[in-house]
Amino acid sequence: MIVTPKFRGFICTTSHPAGCEYSVRQQVEYVKKQKRISGAKKVLVIGASTGYGLSSRIAAAFGCGAATIGLFFERQASGNKTASAGWYNSAAFEKFAREEGLYAKSINGDAFSNEIKEQTIELIKKDLGKVDMVIYSIASPRRIHPVTGEVFNSALKPIGSPSTVKTVDFHTQQVSESTIEPADEEEIRQTVAVMGGEDWDMWMKALKEADVLEQGAVTIAYSYVGPEMTHAIYRKGTIGRAKDDLEATAIKLTENNKDMGLKAYVSINKAVVTQASAAIPVISIYISVLFKVMQDMNIHEGTIEQMYRMLNDRVYSGDMKLDEKGRICMDDWEMRPEVQAEVARLWAEANNENIREISDIEGYRKEFFRLFGFEFDEVDYSADVDIDVKIASIE
Image (cartoon, rainbow, N blue to C red; front, side):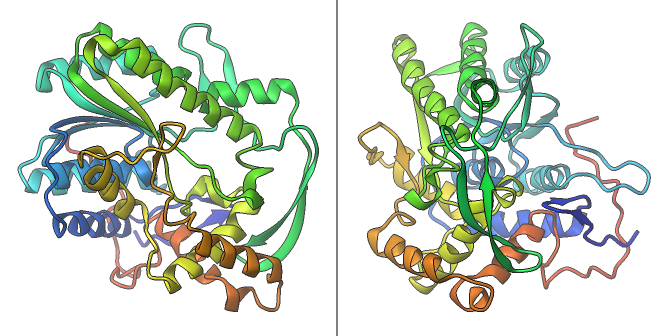
C-alpha cells in the first residue's frame, strides 16, 4: 500500500517502513565511519526501538561490535494499519546487524512486567551468558506495577504554582502562550512511579539475582536538565521530580553493588525532537531556536552523534568527565554559555512574524515526521510498500 503521514495533534498514527529503514541505515552508516570503540561486548537495551535507546543499540553494535538484546513495546502491522515506527526501526536494525555478522535479538512486550524480565534473563543465559552493559531508556506515559498491580499515569505539570510559557505549534508555526495548572501530590507520586528509578532498580536486582551481569558491568539511564527557561515545566515540574528519583537510583545502585563493581550512571542528554517532547509546550519553541543556534555554530547533534560520543569519549575513554552530581553530561555543547545566551535572546524575540527566521521551526517539523519514517528526500513515498514487516528474532 501507499503510506502517507496521518496525525492527530502531536501523535502521528502512521509509519513508513522504507523511511524508518532509511533512518536506521543513516545512523548505522554514521557509526561505521567513526573510530572503533573498545568497549561493551554484550549489551541489553531496555527501550531499544526509538530515540536514544535505538541510537545506543546502534552505537554499541556498530561501534563496539557488541551483541545486543533489545526490549521494546511496539505494534505490528494489522490489516491496513501500519506497524509503529519502533517496530520498523527494530526490524531494520536486526537486518543491518545480521548483515554485519552481529548477534541481535529482540523482545516485544511490557518491560515493566516480571514476565518480560524473566524472558529477557532466560535469553541472556541461553545466548550470551552475561551482559556487560545495560541501557535503560524507557519513555512511557503509563506503568502497571508488577507486584501491586497499581496503574500509574504520568503528568506533565509544574509544581507549586501555575506556569505560563511561550510555545509554538510546529504544524501551523503559530506562537502563543500556554498556562498549565500545577500538579497535586497524587500526580507527582504517579509521575515518579512511571518515570523515576524504581523499575530500573528492579531490573538491575533481577539481573544480579539471576547472575547474568558481568563483574564491573555498567548501566546507564537517560535524563534531561535544560536551561532555566524550561525548568518550570520540566526540571522543576513533575518530570523533574521523577528524574531526581532516577538520579538518586543511580547512586543507590552503585553503592549497593560494590561487591560486583557495578557502575550506574545517569546521562544528561541534549534536547532533541521526540514524540513526547512535541507535546511539551515550552520545549517545542526552545528546541526550534536551539537547533538554529547550534547549527550556526556547527555543533548540532542528533541522538546517534551523542550516543557514539558518550561511549567513545566518556564511558570507554578512561575519563567520564562527570559533573558534581556524578552525571555524564552529554548536554555540554547545548549548555555552553554562548549557546544559551543566543537562545535566550532569540526566545525573547520570537513571535508569529519572525519565528521562521530566528528558529529552525521547519527543521523541527521535519524531524518530527522523520521519527515515523517520513520527509526523507531519498525515499519514494509514491511507491507501494509492504507494511507487514517481520522482525527476524520475533516469531
